[in-house]
Length: 362
Image (cartoon, rainbow, N blue to C red):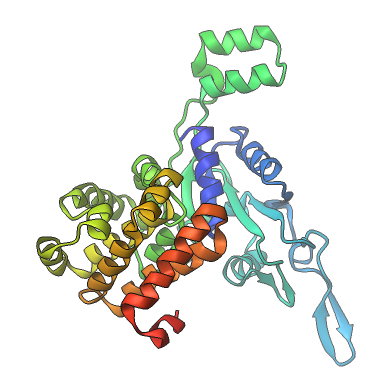
């Protein structure tokens, strides 16, 4: 992938509470991409070059506290929640600190030291085709399944644009323009990873997809999915999404629900229904202000509420809760016209469902 694509996906993944692992040859710009994200998101960047760290550097040194041993706070641990921790050269980590890295990834803590809420984590690694000693960690499926794997390849066109902004000499820029093959060693990243789907990997994928628009999913869906569930499952999943156009679209379900549409939904399997709910939630969230004005002026939110009620009769209770929870969440998250719309829709749902206790469970 090009640097701009890596930057976009890395930020989306971190925003969703997940961890990207950027693979790329040395000097290709992995750290620079994360620096840009940190600057644009006003976050402190903490870089841990893990191959150069010993246990005491990562977890802190032990100390006695009365009759027990505690670990002193390591100097790299962030104080505030607006930080990005970049674990660089993670595939070269010494065996003595790998368990600590796993604890950091899984529990977001090192012994008794907890990361501030909202801290983003990203990892970077050089591919296994480079001549390094300690690369056996990348063969551990349990470890690798914690990341979204994305591959960075140098792009001459993007580099020329960056070089111009950084005032790199005209001679070098002109040379790369004429001989773009010399921007890097010419090798594509080869990971030799055998990523497989699991319940956890689908959960992680769902968290990131919920943070993306339909257009973004169309552009990056396969790359994102293949980096967490593997290329085979990703290809099948993307094909399913593309073919799901045969199923009722959210707009039809919310505004034109009839027996024909209800019968189609009844025939869907659980996976297809889950995808439908995801698309409905995204559609409601991404309504433009012009659409909202039309809905409010024409009292179409009443139709939406009635149709959501009808839909709730043929989907699982959890799926119905998902729609209601999202509308309630949008009402508290948004401002102005959007906030008024979501509040109005939620109030109408309370009326048509005529079950206050059910709504209070959300």
